Length: 96
Image 1: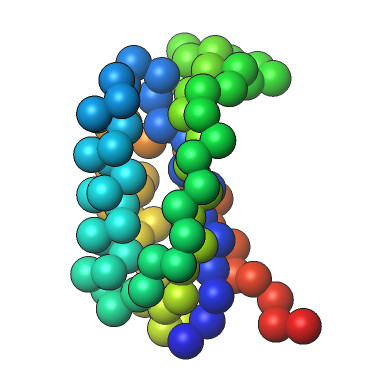
Image 2: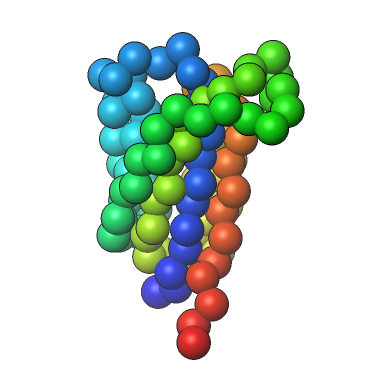
């Protein structure tokens, strides 16, 4: 299994319950592909340097997880079509 880091920007209109539901949904998505969520780090609502899809701020969440190589494409596919996600970045952590 490889280590991955996923940063997701959620829309600012979510309340606390809505944000937690979206984080739980993302965690379930990762576990559904056989991944293991190691850590969820909520950075809170931050202002963007520039406007993205008519949003000037959003909720930042970083999720560290382990998964088999090649299985992360399903996570990316679902995040692309989720309305509450403004942007995301999925990177593989280097082994040092």
